[in-house]
Length: 373
Image 1 (cartoon, one colour):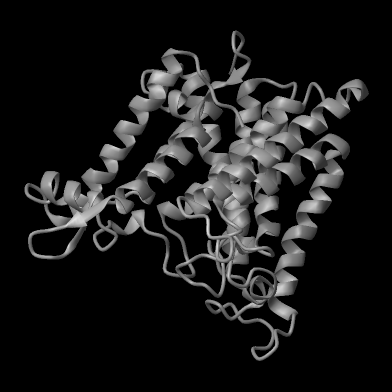
Image 2 (spheres, rainbow, N blue to C red):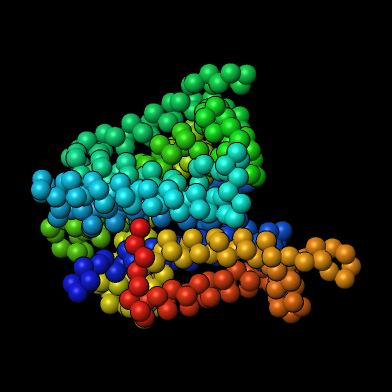
């Protein structure tokens, strides 16, 4: 289950690598107008394959916290050192998030403050500190309060000019708070609300805590099969509860509704249990290596793909017809659309991103360079 030479949980590395590869796939289509439905976010309520990616990553962060800190958190002499490491990692993730948000212009008057890496940073900081200082029982209470409290705010707080209980796009309590504190610094596609906003980070923290609970199951002192069975059955129960809760509070990634947090955490538990069964019990390891390589430099490949992706839009020139062509458009229409249908050309372009990103991470892996944040 755990590689004794590197003290790593291999199934978790595989899951992390597969998750970041999926993130690169959905973030880099050849054309945003031609995408297979599972590779798009749900329009609002509901979910697709793409909507599993971010909660899976936060879940993995929670599991990783347990594996990294379980043997250290009770040693009082190490507390100060652990706090320094946690806070340092928090600020590095924040810095990388702002690096991506503003690249390459960094207009401080309109730069997006929330974002994917910023949410990861906040969830990591809060959950790591909670895990170090409090018992599992307290963490369970905190999780319940986060999920129920967020639901209560969304359902009952009377938003000025809208009222209570609205879950409409840009017309709900989460958007109201974002408009107060993040005005001018939100997602450019909306400008009036942010999918990684302030209040919706509360249930995202709960998602990370579900990762901690899963890590505690996986590191418990019982036989591996019992641990995996418990994790798998817990995941099925969470999926059921998430679907049940969605009858009153719809599953919604943009709002990160409490039902979404529970449902996706259950999905992640089931996937991790199956992966560990596949790797540790069935000993089927042939397809693991590429995902392990991805997973060991997950944040690095995410940041690099984001920067390079934007550079492909920024490098542009005038065509003979007088129109502006970006380097991405030129590559896409010269190497993909001539021999594939629009939707398959778009998918092939995204798959090439995964391959090229893997080659870059493989080069780092061969040199044993792991950029930890």
